[in-house]
Length: 54
Image (cartoon, rainbow, N blue to C red):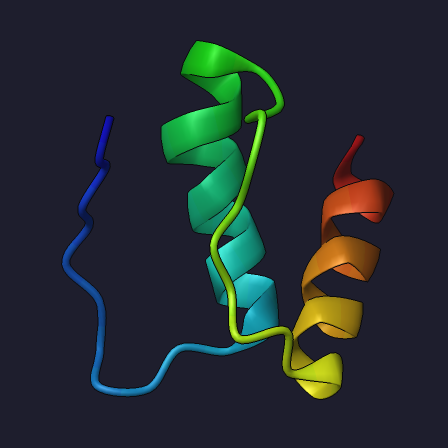
């Protein structure tokens, strides 16, 4: 399943985490897999924000 959301040209990891929690996690729970290029700067900030919101 794909979830799309309109966003500005640049989105921070914090904003991405908010979108993920609002659009995906809230409806489906934790996904079985996430496709990512695994940029350490992004993934660290993304998951840090995701954990702090729980």
